[in-house]
Picture 1 (cartoon, rainbow, N blue to C red):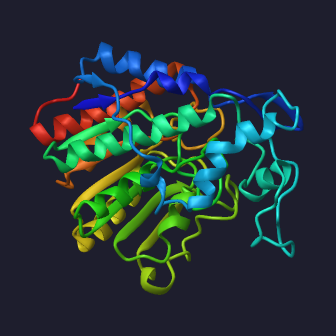
Picture 2 (cartoon, rainbow, N blue to C red):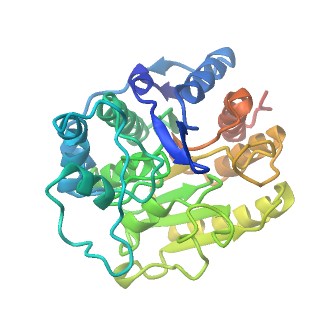
Length: 349
């Protein structure tokens, strides 16, 4: 399996507002580099850079004005004399206007954000565009006939909506790849999100569409970030009614219950008969993840990969969350080796 990776991700690491304090973002460059080291140690396959793509390919998953905002945010911020990381200070919630884009960068930061956990830094655009380009390159590889590819994206993307950054996410890499698959002729695409946190951004992007089925297994939003998205009764709207499928799971979920939910998801995917599968691969379902509360062991990630291989679909893995940095590489590679072994009938390492 080819892994696509870019060093550009190292240009982005800022601060976040968390636990009533400004502190270095929990999402850091060590995550991707640890995964890369494990991919190489496991001899999973070739590691290649992504192809550069025009930012117009991000539109469809996102609006033109949101992509333009991300491109210009740092220069707009520094033009006001600021030199530190940019974070929002106000959000258009409840009865505040959310239809008119503010003229000032302070207003736009809030207009296009859902939290104060996604800073804009000098290197943010370079990192997030390179991350999206990895997903696009991986999708091109799968559409060219490869059974699978791995886009080692950082920053992650599944919390980013059509016009919204948040949860460490800016461009929705998985959604951008799915949208490109549709442009290139795939009739039906599935995005399966196995990150602990609900992919609210991906859901929002495809909520009114029937050409992309979104399926998510995640922590119950009654207790878990992002709190306001991911309930089972969110099933789509308009043409997309019935094409959004959430499986919220309780605190302490371990492999037996997780596997049962995955089998339910498999039935829904099989009925949809997709041409290609995009997996938003978060491994923060790990039992020792510091900001999550599922109980999957490292060996369970092999089982996850094997289960996905049994679906028999061309598959693009897109990296999302996972914050136990010491174990993240092993858990990601376990999924990918489980998938490879499941397809080949070989015993994964």
